[in-house]
Length: 162
Image 1 (cartoon, rainbow, N blue to C red):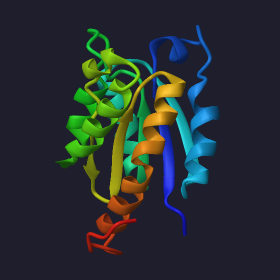
Image 2: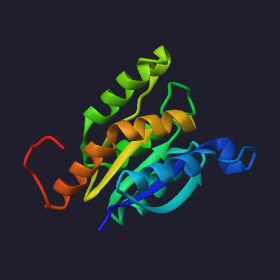
Image 3: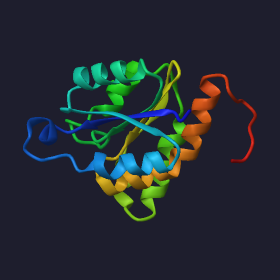
Image 4: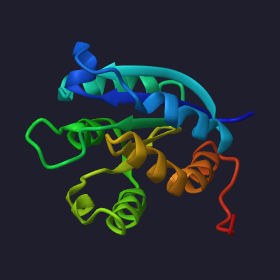
């Protein structure tokens, strides 16, 4: 069975209805093509407590939990702080790879604070808020995410090339 993927869109403007979210419609089909089963999409404002609550609810189901937005250096960008409250083990390679990939075309990507980690059998990955950036970064980390999820549920463990 394909692992579940859920999306938490972190955006004050989308949560208040000022701007519609454009990320879910682009990202979920890409996730399904990468071997995931699309689940719930939730939009929350840039508030640590609301992001944390959404993450805790989503991680109960296991699988992959993606966040978009709130990873930059602005004062309202608090997704990594909320994520650190939820995860038990950080997986720094995800954030490092996404920053380096994005840096190739957008030098300011080094200001991203995106991270990833495990909460039980769920993998949480922070993606950029830009729809295009979210898709590009997801495509980069999707194979590793599938592997990590298999290992997290005890279905794998050998380090082999995919």
